[in-house]
Length: 416
Image (cartoon, rainbow, N blue to C red; front, top):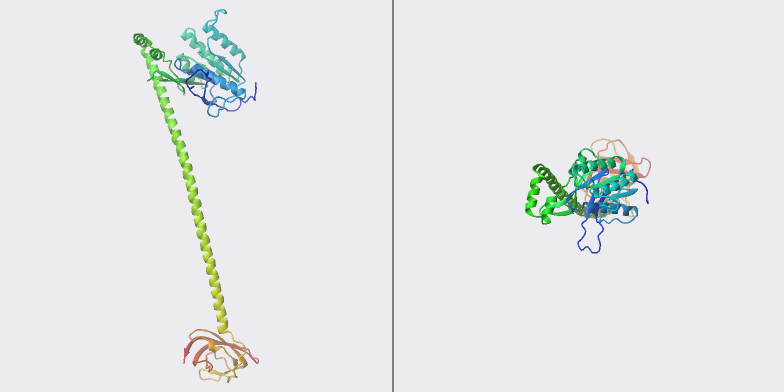
């Protein structure tokens, strides 16, 4: 025995496209078999027609279990998940022996007795044609008892094949049982060697006899003797099989469309990611362009402001020392009658550069300033400008001691 006992794990029997070993002399391609057994299933009962592939299915499962225990690759096209069995027991074939006085029935019973004595709760048991070789009613009753004993504690998984219809009802009284059948092509009267899960099968003995060329009269009498009741049961089973086939067909188509939809979804996501990335790149490019344009605009505006400020300083601030001949002091007198007089002695001015009709402030460098009164509404007459102008002075400021500066602010300017 190799490996670890992992029976406590929830592992399902899932062996898809399992292939039975074939000899080199066989020309036909082997038909793959899908084995899908739920972890709750303790006994799987396979029914169906003769030459339908029931025994081949048993052998394939047993071979796969032994190969997995030996660390060999299982003969299937898909990844396989299998339960771990500590031993594999099989009763397959006919053990009749004239020398040992064993009939087919007694040979099977001896094998099953040995399996009962040596199997454990972790064993795999394979029983072919259980209850065969004796009276059908007694064989069916004995087969039901044997399978129930294995289901209770005799083995981890038991797979049995049978033609007894009574054994098909065990599923409805014990949840550990499951039915499966080998598919049969009713049109061509040939087995397909595929397993249908969840439904019981029919033996189709009369149909197979018809395919093998038995006279029609015999077939007619056989169907008549078979009875209407049995025919109705078989008809129900046939409808169940057909329904199962249709469901599997629709499931297969749904899986196909689901795969196509997933592929389409992946392609759409790829296109969406591509478009999103392209849009993001365009957005970032536009943002960079806007940022660059804004930077250029800010630089241009800053340069223009610097130029305007320099021009304003050149316009409104006093120039350097005046080298022109001294000017006659300008007398600024009150515009209305009164005794308040402001006398300013001007050293130099910048009135030549003042633009008319523009509010602003003129700074005068004064050699001597004196103030009498507090009337702020003064008229100033300046003779150095080209055009004689009249300012309406609204405020002034000067240093009262000796030489200083006088600031005159005007609201409007008009020519005289």
